[in-house]
Image (tube, rainbow, N blue to C red):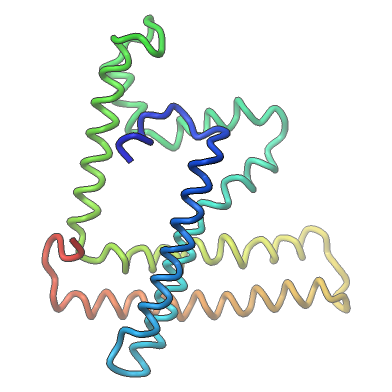
Length: 210
């Protein structure tokens, strides 16, 4: 992350995207397998499975960015670059404070503050994330409340509302089924995440996941 944070944007970085995809697949497989096998009872295993589904939803949530880019009116390049700047408010503030707007982007006067500030922000974020004892549980909660509705429920609901397919058509009922099923999955996953947080609270300590 220290290296990737120095890149101005992720535009056309196909190899990094491929590595990210492979890591996501590996993480998803490990999370699902662990949730199935870890647990002293059927109840623990069941909630663990839904907890893993919510974490997977968080992991794959970033995949919606290319879909958003595909719907942006041309030219996409300028808009997406502005979006990337907006999504890095910490870097923007630090570089605006310590950088020199009159110098070139890759001049020593701007490169040194950029490398130092971005590295510092990554280190601080990593330490805070490692310090939180419920990091995985928080990811599951975010996935249940945020990414599962965003990725699986709202798109099919908006499709039915926008294009209004016939209620007798296969598309309408398929979309409705997807929305209902993933609404139930999201609700159960939210309960599983809160349950896991309450269980982990009994052994609360900083850097518990390290």
